[in-house]
Amino acid sequence: MKKIAMLMTQDFEDSEARKPYEAMKEAGFQVDIVAPQAGQTLQGKKGEFTIKSDLAISRAQADDYAMLVIPGGHSPESLRLEEGAVEFVKAFGTSGKPIAAICHGPQLLISAGLVRERKMTCYKAVAIDLKNAGARYEDSALVVDGPFITSRTPEDLPQFCEAILQALRTQPAHRQVGR
Image (cartoon, rainbow, N blue to C red; front, side):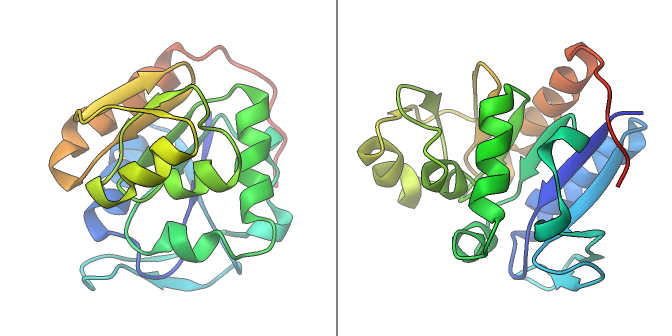
């Protein structure tokens, strides 16, 4: 069974975490919530979705996962300051494994230095940051560029979730180590 890491902390965008999480679980994938601390109760900024973290960022290894998913909201901005979060994202970027980021999620990709010359989308307020970091911004519901899957807002979740599942279905199997 492929394992997916969902990197988040408090004040994530509720639907941008819940819908991909549910879609991946329903498709039979294991989804680990990676957060600053294991066992932490994380709440969305609207209070509509609450989930408990499975693993602390300090213990997470990109080699253990087939994909990284980064929901938006205020969570990505906070995670940029969490020790190890940017390095975890960077490890995925150098591995070539898929990374899916929606809304403010690309802020972590920017901090990890992964966006230069990549075609991406994001929430409108983050677009200037993507451009300044060297990305080719496109205002589209879904942009896939190599291993990077990006979307703008909750309205784009149907395309975002389908792209995640498609990437997981077509990704070659590789040995994954348990926690």
